[in-house]
Image (cartoon, rainbow, N blue to C red; front, top):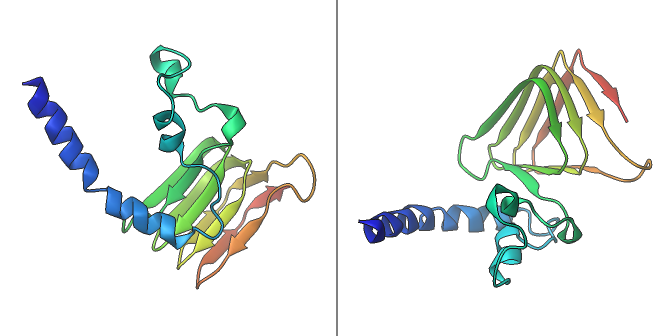
Length: 152
């Protein structure tokens, strides 16, 4: 029974590989860090055991939040939220903030009609120095802020 479960898991995961490859092709010019899965695939074992083993080693950089690699994907945020990584909003991906308090420590890339829509919120762009992170908006993408307070 366990072999059947593993087979079904592998079959269901493998169907998303083409979606992942398409998303990587979309922003491959800006995305230069080593993919998350390759880092652990090259090791014989994880450094730490248990749930802590899922933590990414900081010497390889930070993870990225990708919105839009699945068609029609939307991330809705209301309340307090911290994103300590780069954000990629690609294809028809949408990030909606309503009455939120969002802190971002990373680059923001909008490509191929991605939308960042913020209303009645606070957005904090956390930087160690003024040119630390950047915002890239291209290919008919939209960065919309209404009734929003920002800090840099």
